[in-house]
Image (cartoon, rainbow, N blue to C red; front, top):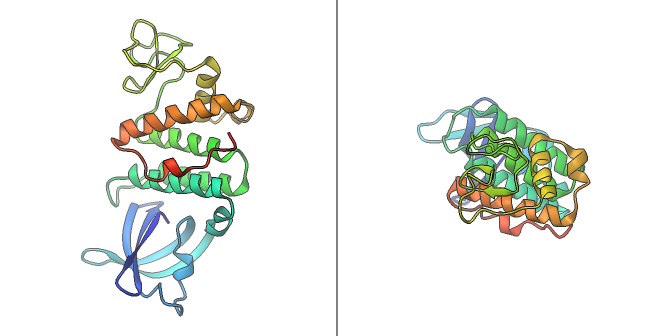
Length: 236
């Protein structure tokens, strides 16, 4: 579940990312009452099996079974909680059309939240890997090897958000960033899932990579995530 909004005195509008039907908004009636049997299952970070009754405007939740509930464990760790919140917002923003199937985005989010809960990697690294891969699924995969404009084989030292990744000296536009070789290597590792390289990266490279990922995400979303500035990266 991605998000919940209050509706009236006892209901909620919940936003779900589903396996087969993409992003779906629906009404959960009475879930804010203390007597509700399903209210505790309809919380952000929850992986649930939901049955819906089709309505004219919004469907209505009729039954909920919990598969995995990550909220309590993530809430106990601020860094992982804020990273998870940014992942939920990203998933919602990158599925702009309701009921448009997006199985890759669904699978990526489920895997990303499980990794956060299991503390497999640094929370900031997990988030940045998720952001890069979710952008790639949406059709905006950055290039961290060959020139994003002409295809000239790398490595290249300039990074252009507008061009879509690293660029060669000939294609380098004004204002391009100049990350270190190790930062570019880290970005490529996060996108490809090379956790041996990512886990061994230096704090400075992680900070620089996070800044580039955030800028790249904001460029394609046309505005930043509200949750991203709240992410705790003190461990990087």
